Image 1: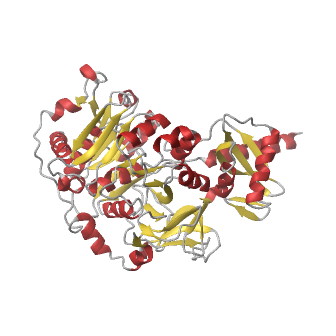
Image 2 (image 1 turned 90 degrees about the vertical axis):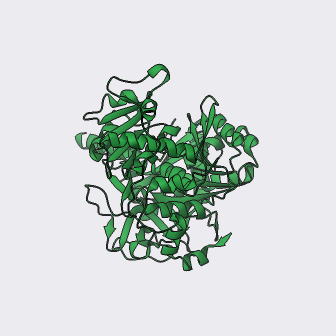
Image 3 (image 1 turned 60 degrees about the vertical axis):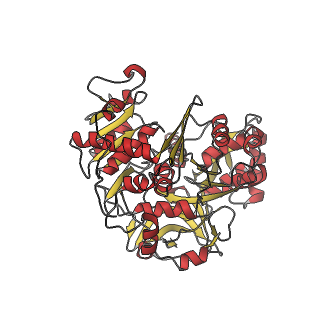
Length: 554
């Protein structure tokens, strides 16, 4: 294992670029980097598993030929360098073919999450001006409700099922075109992906990802995930989202490493099946997925213990209880990683670099990044004072984000990119996550991070999930309120609520425990599984306003 401090001290961006891209940033093509370079006889690129346990294996050579055919089809439709090609596709080989084909001709691939409804799809397609969208028979009906929808290519079912009049048929068109297509060479500043932020606090905003970001994707995959040649790798994240396409596709494929797709709903049974069938040793996913697996207890642990070498978590903070469970029940280390769609993964507990791991901390700055904590005046803060996590772009050559397309942003202040997340610097140099800036609770003059309270709640065996928000209170400004999802073996009554309050108070502080606990069947989340505390917080604000108005009227 390489030493973290040595990697940070000796970091050399040109050398990293040369290592990652086998050259420089002057002449690049993402299809070459993620496919052609590795198209050696028999070299596997994709292990595919269907929900019915059917399976298929595709080599880089397979993908190269199919991508070239579809690239020629795109050219025949007048699609050219810089145009957007959208994919509303499940985790099948067609998704890879479409992305690689778009990249081959210098076009930009735009992923669309298959759980999106028509309006979410419409906003993204209209905002991007996509020239074409590729979908499958299951998702095709959504596009009939999209205004100004571009040309549609459908991966039809048996006997053309799902193919609407006027659509192109994906596989039929592939047979019409040559498997030879000269790739268009670009520079590191040219975009190859169009992503959208989650839009939890407003309309989803588009941002372009430049080709040079592949260097950062590889670096994270190597240093933080510690993907080794002998590993069997599976990223649980959907490729309709940043973590899935950045680090489930572009990162590993550009390293010549096979990836795994499971085309089906996330269940404990399917997860165990894929891990065992493909001998998965390196797993990445979200805390939401891991908590679902933990809830299965021995039904999960007994089937895969000893299989996994390294597990990584991203998307939201990883609760300490999850870390302990994976160590005790699976005998494997799970590490927390922090990032955003805009900047990739910049703060990690690295599997591949040796440094201390502070329980509950998001980790240390990724090589090539300088991460700081800022106060409200954008001054850097010392250890132990909560503030905004920021990237010092003047000293972060791996940072590639330059802003949103068509949207102004307040995220850039001088040399800093402001993440919007509240964190705290630890003595050992690691950084702990406190919460989104809007999520931090001010109660009786104290600032309370919801993540710490949620983590303490989850340590209790009755609690499966928890969300903590600030409820308006005339005496304390806000009081800490918890929304709790219970294990089916527990009854949510007043006695259990008091037990949980004492449980948290003993672990944190007198001001940090939840004075109110509401038992719920589920928590509001984004389609990618991130907790939406703001929905719960807004509900409490609305209730407080109604109560205040009722008192005035009375």
